[in-house]
Image 1: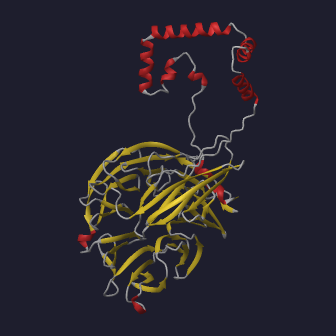
Image 2: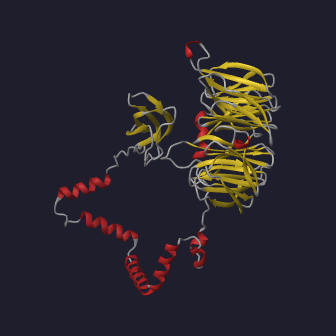
Length: 542
């Protein structure tokens, strides 16, 4: 059994979600769908969403960010636009190299452009270049600390700046160079990082190290066997998420304590009122009072947005499969009771059908056509208008139907049945063999067996990520069975090895061609199979 929380599907988007952000006061939620559409919604007292405005941005969106009482939408081509919380456009600020990332730093906005420059600005004020002011090289990473802005350069050098001064520099280590993989700060303002370098251990093996700094003083350096991917504040310091799936609590003293192991890279972290949340693979893992719980999503829930006032978590993520539909935005309460369920029940919330508005029979069959028109497309309205114009033809058709019905109604059902039987058994059927065959056929029981029709889905083609793998969803929910009696779903690989016993299966596959077989069985023992091929390739599919 598994502990989980009640989850509600809030939004079923038309296109895949790439960003999900919540305003500072928890009153508004915004997300992007597809390339250039951003939806701004208000959060009601019941934590449902009411759409305020759908904003069509002219270019593919690179960042969506709430800054104070404004919504910032950025792209990698022209710059960013600023909107108020009603969705109304306020201003556009051009960034020649486009926008890669956006942060809030007090009343200021921090922009990292496509050339690695760090820019700072405010509403209705021009952007200023910190890169030019402090003579920096290309930036690869930015972190907003308690009072400082930390900027990582591509050569491994890190600087800490305030509004106008460069306060501290961590120099590059090693002649060969190094790569800073992640940075962050504790709740008290200590700065930490993980780095990769060469020639630091015997045999020139790659080394991963963790460093903790207090101002300009290095207070800890230790070796790691894992890369830090993300971090978040914790009342006692910070929580750190690593590529091996482990989550650690970092104390202000530098001590690390294991919180949980998720078995897959941790992409996002939160800590709230004693609970640590980690987004990993297709799950959100949580820990409360020593109890581990998790929630499954149809996508990878890398976007976590917390409404701190009432401990409500909104989350979203995609399965990285271009051939599947967009995944829903989910909502759960961190204050709700934990539920103990079977592992297979974790997917029920996102498999449930969305709520739809049903039209009552009174509306459909009322004499007032204006009510019906409200539920028709323009083409359907035009068709009804055309039918009205050809009323003579319609009246003629109805009259003919009415006459036919009148004629046939003169015979009683019993008379019609007797007449039919007489026609089948009278002497006009000269061929006794045919006569006997028809009667036997009418009397014999139905012996046909209707097998379930396995449907593994279309063949798939995916582009591998930087690690040479891709996430794949095998979905057999298109399988049909006229009796709805399927009792077994089985996925097999090309060697005949059983992979799963469920309609859906998520896999992480390396580059190459992979063939899978789906086998479904109903309770009568009837079964069918279907196959599909999944190709994982390098490079672009265009």
